[in-house]
Length: 378
Image (cartoon, rainbow, N blue to C red; front, top):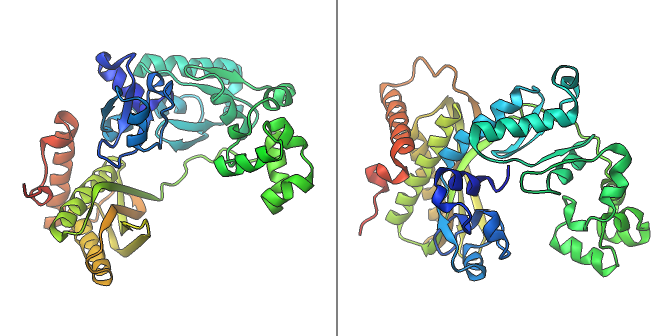
């Protein structure tokens, strides 16, 4: 999808169309989650610190993300994918690989399938998608980025070298900024130059992965599309504007994060049997603590109680430490097709309460209702 979060916001609020829009954390240490194409002209991109983004484009409009809304639109998009093939490997809410090899006889040529998917996405959501079409995942991914927004690029087998060779090495996943800089020091600026580079140049950089990198630069990739990838965890985390030492403030933040995680757990119709807490200190040292239990649950109060226990245990080891980031996650997920028939009355009541809160948030926004334990003292 093209600038997915930002495009959803511009679709839902037409006053934002054509304006430089940033979706992300609005606090001092916030990060850009999505940038509209209007703001990208100023060099703003996702994962950039919000402070740097606003330095580059001071007049940008900043809004916090609405994850439930993006999940809702994502479900509509993936439903369209399922009309064409069951072989779908979702990478995120807005990106997926589709293997349509077995759909050609029924649905038409690969290009016809791609154009029909684009048409249905626009008709259903009002948003545009960019599609890359090729014989493998590596090439399809590269193709999908070549003509954004609203693009469709088909790299046919006989065109691979012609298309890939002139591309900058940064187009290849796995070549980060540091590796790219080292390659450029050796005069390697394009995928064609990487493909033809001798071992004497590449081996010091990639070691035993040298041949793999050369193959990728040539567009060789034998990875299959793996359908129905199992979701391993769900989490929420927050980087604080100011480091926090106060235990009451930390507890309030923890409760808020637990509620956000539980809302996502319920939305995806999962239960969990493991709670995780992530803690990052002022010096960026990061710790994780986790606890498993049985039977699996959606009980928000139980999840919060375990998260509190984990954080309290860590704080005993780190007295008076200042915390920069806090996160709550759940793992060991299982489908919530049938909740435990012997679940306690209080757990069942909490599930109903959580579901009711989710519906209120969906209708009136995240700030419309909160639990008392989330309130900060003013």
